[in-house]
Amino acid sequence: MEYVDRQWKERIFSEVAGTNMTKSGKFFADLRDQLGIPYLDDYGQRRLLHSIRHSVCSAAMAGWVKNNLHLQQTVGHEKSGGITKRYLHTFPLSTVSCVVDGLCWV
Image 1 (cartoon, rainbow, N blue to C red):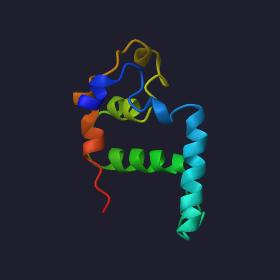
Image 2 (cartoon, helix red, strand yellow):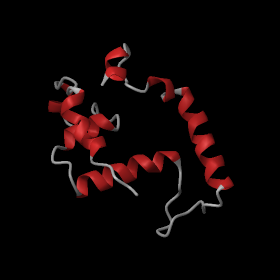
Image 3 (cartoon, rainbow, N blue to C red):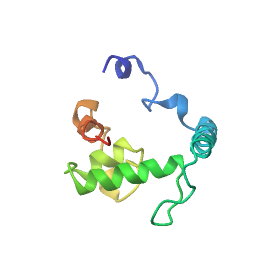
């Protein structure tokens, strides 16, 4: 929470957003290849950095997340969707932290 309080930009992890996302994706792909992890998973889905977002959303909606709007804000899609969402303010981190706190992939 201290890290978040120190941030002055709109996104918590703005340093890996935008143009840096391409670099992060390349790093992830190179690491996947170095570890010998196949490009496609058992369902024929590509293993890309962006795929982690899909996995988080799927797991969260199938399990612990009860509020779709909290999940959308966590993955950066809070502005998409219906007209009502346009008028919503950003939820406090303490409200949406349950999305991240619920992740446990061991």
